[in-house]
Length: 222
Image (spheres, rainbow, N blue to C red):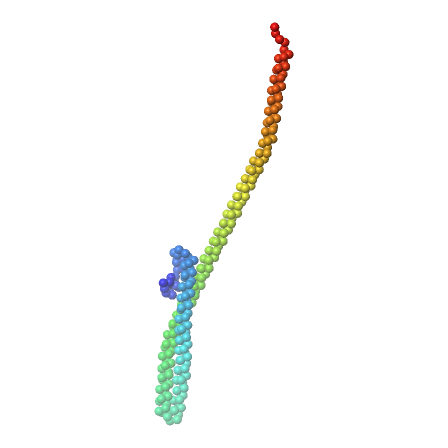
């Protein structure tokens, strides 16, 4: 069973409320459009059959009126010729065609009412369908905008992540360079330390030498 069961339900349907209750609004909208299109096609097909009957009855009425007029002229001719018997038969034919024409006119009047109702329903359905299609297009546009926005957000996130990674790599490279410079400076620092140590050692040696010399020069006590 479809979303709608009668034309009135389609025309009077609160599309917004139905979409609010739907788990998948896009799918619900697609089903609505599909059912409305099918219903509209069925109504137009039925209306076409009734319109065809309407035209057929209109032709029958015209033919009956024409034949009734012909038999009326023949009745007048028979009277003018003194043939009352033929005039009576002609009048009977005239009345028969007029009766058929009147009955056809009654049926035609009923069909015209039905056709009018069909055309009214078709117009209302088309207006509703156009409204739903516009809402469907709006939902589709919103979906595309959300996808586009999501892509942009992801792109911005990637750019920010890339920038952060680039800054990190820059800092890491700078640290590596500083460490490398420090490693290069270690030998020079060690060499300087060795030079000072050698200088201090020489001073100690000289001091010890001076002490020995001073001790040898001092006179011995008896």
